[in-house]
Length: 325
Image: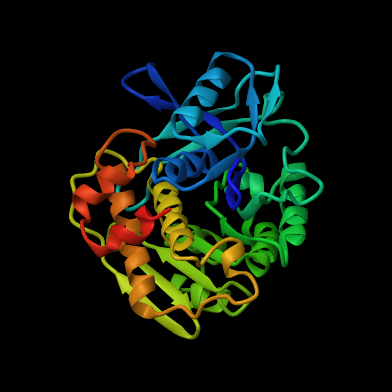
């Protein structure tokens, strides 16, 4: 394991993507799993804390993580089957929709997060429903509290309406985690579900006053906006031909964390003297994250890019810092 590991905690699911009629393609997925793979492919020292089955799909998850140089020291194996997510393709604006089968699966068990903070972990990232729901959600909250003063943290709500409570119940849980996170990434779609009567930018601007150093609002093909230190910067997305949007937000999250970590804005290097965020630096982080997400959108399934692939579409200074891991 690395000395300043980025630990990604949460679910790993088998996405069943419709082909035609009654046929489905089984694809490895789960927002935290995708984010860990994305970080590993970008060269960041990364570990995954999740529950994986010992069935054939669980073995495929392990192989995929190994191939992406993700540390498995925090993985818990279970004899129960791998959890499933049936995917319904949406538009470039709305994204995909998911129906989950989690009960009596490898997901359904004690949290893999340790009770004491690991010495080698400098940053913890959590997201999706496993960060707020049930015993795993409780464990995430405790881990955020343990991280205070010893590691930085990040959070992506990545709302899945079919497996979380109604907005009135979910908003307090989400905001509790926002208050404890160093960095928050959230989509406009998530905020419209959580706060249907409010404008997403207004909510993101309010969230950054709750505790995070940085809040990033993504808007699909319209790009992303960062809120920090009373400032706001926008970055447009490139025009691309979209194959599907599965995993695009996770690729964005992974690339944002990789760029920030490389610049010393995450992990132990940033503790006690968190760097002032300069607009040009934040803009560069957004450009790097958007490029990674755009590449993912041009191919089927959650298939985050490598650093080499990002360099091909975003050469120069935007990739130099992230390359210097």
